[in-house]
Amino acid sequence: MTGHQDNPGTGYTLSGEIAARVSIEEVLKSFGYQNVIVVDPQDIKAMQKAVDDAVTSTVPAAIVARRPCLLIKRMKHDIGKCVVNQDTCRGCKLCLKVACPALHLNNGKAEIDRNLCVGCRVCAQVCSFGAITREGADNQKGE
Image 1: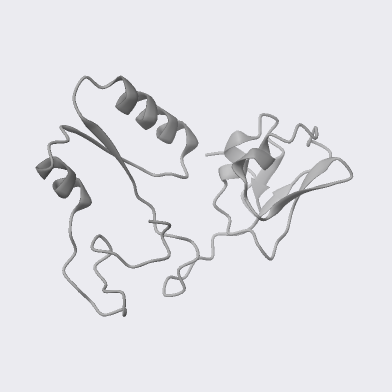
Image 2: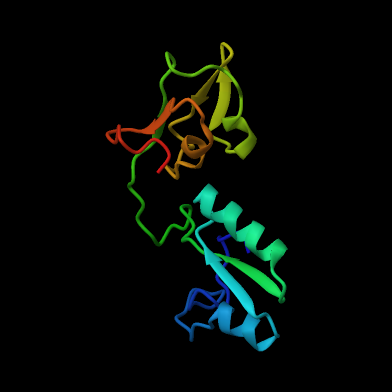
């Protein structure tokens, strides 16, 4: 799922009514998956480790990527926008590989469209130079 649709794991029906929540992990275990890994998909290092663990697992493995979608309207998300320090940015384009619609190049360096940024910091996690931070959070470069 992309996170935009209600599904048995969200506790809501497609029409938005409250429903029983189904544990995706328990469903996977009932299908015979012995190694069920739950991970935050916006934590790049944890996600890579989960993929590595699943691929090298000697038993059937599955990954459940769990995080509330930042675009769901019924949830309030006010975590700040990311910004690129133009003096620190080297123009390596690594951040563009995360395919975020808020990121683009301007004069050879990364720039973030404030109207599209949801503040997830995935771009900051991949920036090797620490050029991307969230506004008002200088110490949160890629954490």
